Amino acid sequence: MSTQITQRRTAGPFKVAVASFIGTTVEYYDFFIYGTAAALVFPHLFFPSATPLMGTLLSFATFGVGFLARPLGGVIFGHFGDRVGRKRMLVISLVGMGLSTMLMGLLPGYAQIGIAAPILLTLLRLFQGFMVGGEWGGATLMAVEHAPAGKRGFYGAFPQTGAPAGTALATVAFLAVSQLPMESFLGWGWRIPFLVSAVLVVVGLVIRLSIDESPAFAKARNQNDLVKVPLKEAFKRHPKEIFLIAGTYLSQGVYAYMTMSYLVNYASSEVDLDKSSALIGVFVAAIIAVVLYPICGALSDTYGRKTMYLIGAVAMGVFTWPAFLLIDTGTSWGFALGVILLFGIGMPPAAGVTGSLFSMVFSREIRYTGASVGYTISQLAGPAFAPMIATALFASFGTSNAVVAYMLIISAISIVSVSLLPGGWGRAEARHNLESSLQ
Image 1 (cartoon, rainbow, N blue to C red):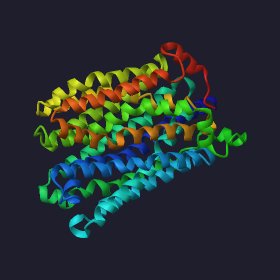
Image 2 (tube, rainbow, N blue to C red):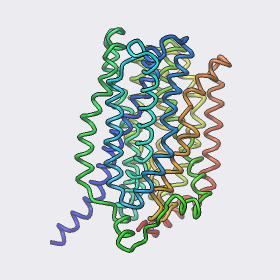
Image 3 (cartoon, rainbow, N blue to C red):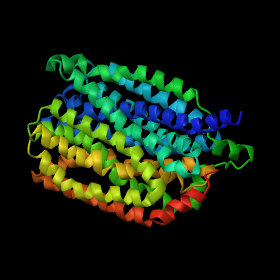
Image 4 (cartoon, rainbow, N blue to C red):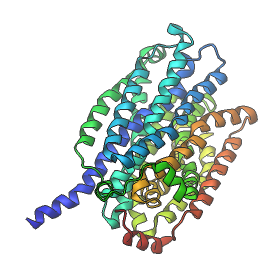
């Protein structure tokens, strides 16, 4: 009997972590296929009368508006996640994301319905951003709050790993349909990755419905520790920490969306690399990241989360200029190595510990709200318009050095922010994390 109980207890955290990973993979797949389509398709279908540069800028602008709704999604989902439970909010966010993505795949272009096409596209993107705003916090807390004290970094990496996994799936989907003749690709082929999302959502929904509510939330509910307005309490208790989290995540968010959206467009339009080679490069980098995220999360349980995150923030900055030198060679191997440096190697030390690091800042009754608001503020401040800013910088200065300078500034902000987060460093921080409780 005791053996069976032990097996159930050890299997529980892993099952929840895998469920969080699969759910976030589906959600990020939905969000990332939009970024790829914004680079390759939407300028032609929704802004055909604009110049190529203006069409790209307008397309990336619709990409960015999705982030405008993310803080609101973080607040609303955070409120109810702290009031009625993490699991319910995750089910709602998954269904909402899938619905908006499927409708995008059915949306007529400018040639069919005129100005209504980009307007409807923008509205769907706003709804999509609202839904994903509540996804990250809930999925992360489910994994971290179910995890044993000495392995929160490892289990907390699983939902974050959904980002590169979703990128890989989105890239493969577009790589497959991009093999069609251009007329077919722009006519109907690009819609397939959006419509496939409906199948992925069903899979994710079945898995999410099979897991239990977070034990930390259940304990807070049973002890009547729930607060009426979590947002108010979060800013009352932790105003500095919320904005430090936003600054800490800034480089990770910018580098991720620059890799999977801007660099794909940059490679095909500025260095004459065919889109298939660019997508293959992003896919390889994403697969490497999928492997390294959990490894870095596990290392943080020994060497400390702040330490691992700082290593990643510094690595992203150090790798930026060499990565662009490789990308500017205009070769498939140069592009692949460049995005591997940024996305596959530089980012994992930071991204692998994001969930566990940010969760430890807040008490259980305001944790969903506090983590989600800090995270989504960062998304709005950085990744939202990073591809558009980079496009404008290159157009103004005619060199990738301007884009590199922009990314280095972002990296510096994250380095300073993570250094100011509460907590120690190295093994001392890891020992403190082991002794502390999320319950």
